[in-house]
Image (tube, rainbow, N blue to C red; front, top):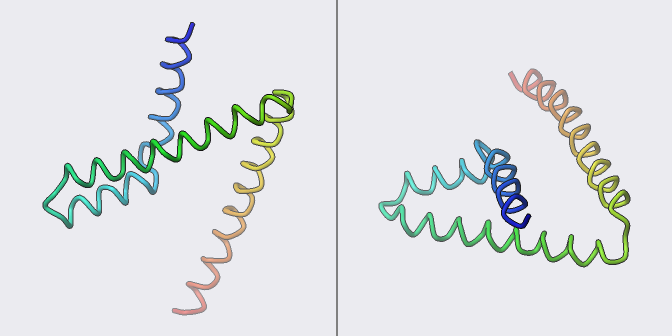
Length: 100
């Protein structure tokens, strides 16, 4: 049971992280330095600590908030972020056209 949770979490996070800003930043830093191991250790440590904070926060919140509330908060938050990104994409296009 724990193994299936571990595997599903790994796959979800691994797929979500492919091609994101963190990976691109790691790629850029690694390309500009001659120390790929140091870049790997630094970026891995940052991801581990960020994930630990998320897991601890989610775990502690789940003790006093029902799962449906946590999922709703996450869904609403992602929806708001998506709408803001969508609106900003049009704003950036207008600014680019005005500057050219």
